[in-house]
Length: 83
Length: 187
Image 1 (cartoon, rainbow over the protein chains, first blue to last red):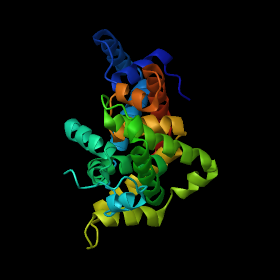
Image 2: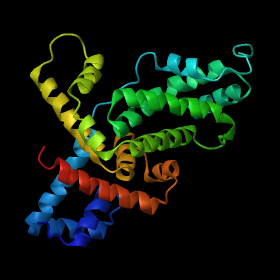
Image 3: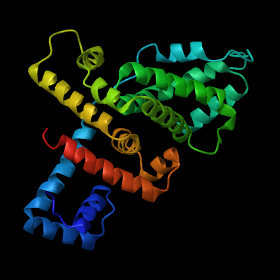
Image 4: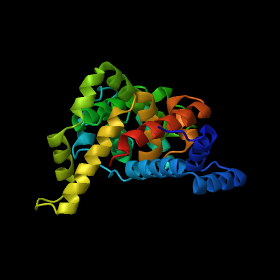
């Protein structure tokens, strides 16, 4: 099971949030060099982020706007007059 | 872009419905994408994304014109997604997202007609696995993960969209990442 020191895991998350101080980053890196379990944990976290970011961008269906416009409540018909 | 959006909003407020169509065009892909990643299902994503725009339209007078429109719109959309998720039975969405056909239609729609090269089929499968794991996250973690990593928003924007303190957003992102780490470990 995971026995990584809790504060090291917190530093990993600070690192991923890009909110880690220079000193803490040095501490994290030093620890990762000496601890296999933390190294794996950190690697898995970075992989997770990369995987989630690798999901492709998908677009709304082609007639999306038309469908929304057709469903809008009809009111104050002045559309187009002022433009 | 913000100035165009503000102009269109003012036109909508004066009764020009067509101006709203331009707003929908500008934001439809982002809103649909967030809904899809939240719900894991094309049909529901379309339904909820449409509903989000309709609510934005009917409540356009309550929008504070000095604020960022996308933040407001994403708030409407994420709230609708969370409501939808909570209405579903948990075991329903665990299974529903396995979705062989659903994912296929989604990607075949984007791609060309010809047979797909093997790498693309593999990456489609990978994409589906990742989506399935995102869909298994509890909604409070799912929303922050989607907004941060799919929509690439700042912690500050996420906190405004979800109306949560930044500290809470951070904690949820951490927990969401840890949960996903365990789920995605074997991929």
